[in-house]
Image (cartoon, rainbow, N blue to C red):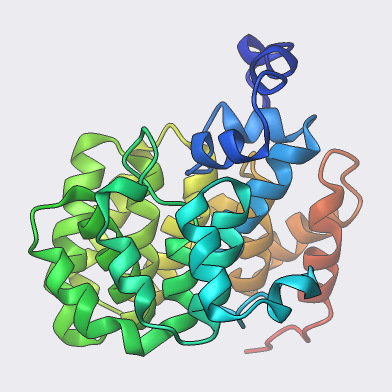
Length: 290
């Protein structure tokens, strides 16, 4: 069952009492019950999509509202200070422009929400890319949990082999604590760097998580760290309850008769329309003959 029934009907009451700015503050991580609410609440879906885009390894997402690009840096800084929903967009635009004042905002506890987070900073740091690495590495040893999280995101996205111990420690810490959303960050980073020492912890995360959406990150991590060992997990992912995991599995599935049979089933599965294209695409790859 993909949607926990216990949360059915709660979204209208909870979300209806918050404006956009309050929602951005409340939805700082794409975990349940937020992901369930997103199924019926477009406002929540949009915020979660922005969160996912901010940590995507692909090209940086362009802002779809052209007016933000017309605002000068001084006024953007004013929007950050004023707060509200525009703070997130102003921070992201400052990051896109390469303005290092983003680092100072990240370090300002007075700007953080009740959860200790500052929405918009991850997106801004994503745009700054490698330029954020020196400052991010200092945050990791700061003792400030929020800055540690910001720093780990940066090294996961653009760090090098020298950052592997930090990411390994972060993965271990979050898996032991069952902080599955937070564990996605080091999992992807370790996979990007191909750190084989992470395999056992990633397997434990894959097998132990109660947050099904996190399995996509753990699968990505395993594929990057140990492609051959990850094949069994990839095949298992073809039957996952999450379409995001199934699509990843379709992309990486080994070429075997059993896999091709399962892919054909997925191309016509009425319960998995989001997977049809990925399964079809994989089936177009010629079978490897011995």
